[in-house]
Amino acid sequence: WVVTPALEQLGVPAGVRDVVGRRLSRLPEQTNAVLACGSVVGLQFDVAVVQEAGQFAEEELLRALEEAMAVRLIVELPGPVPRYAFSHALVRATLYHELSAARRVSVHRRVAQAIQSLFRGHLEDHREHEHEENDVPRPHRLAQRVAHPISPARHGFMVVPRNRMMEVAP
Image (cartoon, rainbow, N blue to C red; front, side, top):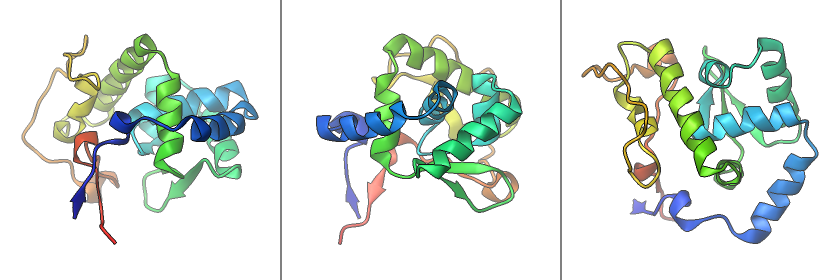
């Protein structure tokens, strides 16, 4: 294993930002809003978390996800819980960094509230939404903290904190 810095620390090259930006600019505004919210959740995101955090109507959310899949910005993950993943970490990073700092704080707060609401009693693995990327305390803290790890089998996913991203060395 080779530990690598998080993509957020490396930044997205300008050429990649331009290519991804052009692909995003062809999509409806609502699709970009859904993807931006998903980018705050992480490389993989649960539909229920994005829906609640972004306050999207179910039909507009599903339409946006289908549009993003059609242009291969996201892929649907197998499993009993509707989940998606960005097709590449650079797509997610571009969306995330297009948000202003104030908007990121706001969306992280709403994501934390959605996770608290949806996964009450299984919050240990979702703490990354309590802090900004530079580890300054967030304006909103999760009210409950429990020692139970989230069950991937029960919820169909596991969150990997940004600061623990690793890749396999060839």
